Structures are given as C-alpha cells and as structure tokens.
Length: 211
Image 1 (tube, rainbow, N blue to C red):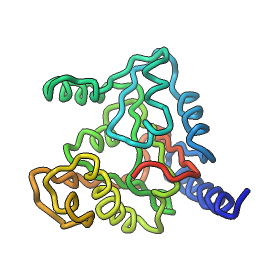
Image 2: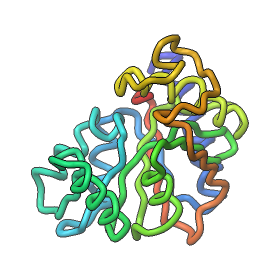
Image 3: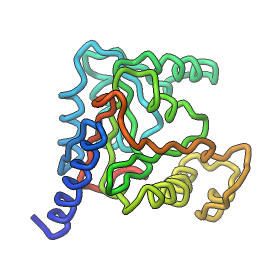
Image 4: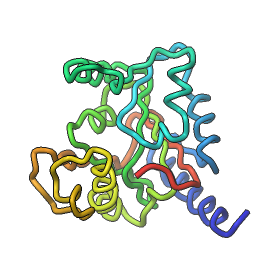
C-alpha cells in the first residue's frame, strides 16, 4: 500500500474503534466498491429503503443497486411535484433502512450533519429502524467543533454549487453565516452516541467521497 493508503487505513480504524465505543456499528472499507457491498450485506432483501440527499451513496453505486434489486425503495428524487417529494420524505421515517452520509466526523467518533429542510437530520435522530452512513475519509477531522466547522464552511458551500441557490456561499464559495430563505444550514446535528446501540451503522471509506 502507498503511504496515503496506510495513513487512511490506520486513521480510519482508529475512528471506527471510537465510533464503536459510542454505540455505533462501524467498519472501515478501503474502497467505495467495498463499502457498497458492505451496505448491501447489511440491508435485507425485501426491506423498505429510503435515503437523503447524499452524493456519496450515489457515487458508489449504492442507490442504483438498491433500485435494481429486490427492495422496496422510496426515492424522493423521482417525485414529479413538491407534494410528492414531501410525501416521500415523510414515508422515509417508516423505512427499515435510511441511507445517508456525514458532513463531518471527529476523530473521537462524533457525527455532524447540516440540513436545509431537516428531513435528513430528523431521520438520523428518529424514525427509520436503521440508519446507514457511508462517508469518505475526507470527512474526518480532529474534533467535533472542527466537524461542525467543516459542515458549515466546506460541505454546505460545496453542496450549494449543486443547488445554485441565492446564498452568499453560492456566489463566493465562502460561508457568509447567512439568514437567506434558501440557506441549507438551518439544522445542525451532532450525534455524540448511538441510542439504541447499533441503530446507526457507519461505513468509513478510505477514499475521498462526497462533499
């Protein structure tokens, strides 16, 4: 392995151990392909599966595999109207598995997420039977405070380049701590521990994935 791969694996396994110490079911995968296979290993066929707006789970091919497999899928991106999208978001709370990523992960095993409408962070907190998070090693930072800073100043401005909403970070690439109606930093969630233990499953990947 290269020095970078060795570093990612050792750091990743340290973070996994700390996540497990907080009640998360966590593992390290070297590649996105391995992470996809691990997630599919966890998700029982015939299950009701939903997901939030995660670039990571799409980039590794997980949503495509689920949509083409023996699963009941709730995909709000297929909704034709805002009303249909809202119904899909509400239905996700009854899912057996909710898939997402993290905007920041501290080395001591805390998860940080930022949201615009709140449906994603709400599902992480309560509702779906299980939550599976897939996150690239680029999401790992030193402390929970650093993870929050990453969510606000890296993940959100990057995501706004997808959405191109009317916010300062869309124009400048830099967080303006705005109160814009189109702000996507309205709900900030730090998940310190997993309760009940094992409900949230984290797959940390030794590649740069998502925002």
